[in-house]
Length: 184
Figure (tube, rainbow, N blue to C red):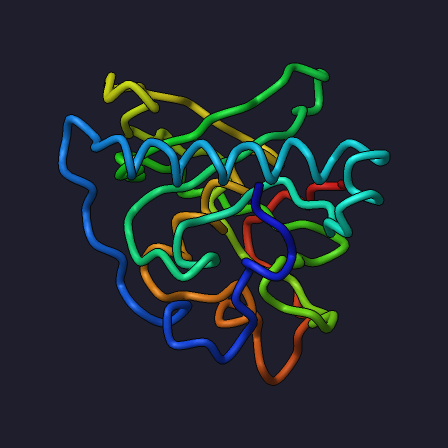
């Protein structure tokens, strides 16, 4: 089981590398790694398990965050309608996105970043993601709101991009043009 000790922190070289594609069908080793990512995210949201194992709650995790520079992410959260959005994906790719932007009013956080970095992180309001599930089956997901933001955050990790790279350095809370604020 992954713990906070397995998560690399800001400044670790794996967080700035572009992750490699995972060859399909996935190997048993790659499946095990991806499975451990989704299990961490689910366990971190269970207050009892999280406390027992010292897990910081998260809603997404990417391979590079555990020093595995392969294109794999896990996301587990509920959307604004309380529908569960839970995916463990190999090689996720944004295949289309809206012109309209959105951002979290409370800003973003990251399991690899220990301090709070305030500011708006502009993201696409709606995205379509294509990737492969644990069994290597292709999946296509349309997302908006918080789930869309989380997927973009995790896919950024696969490209060596940190959330704070998107924050306006001069004015972190500058209004984002044509953007919908998203409450968390």
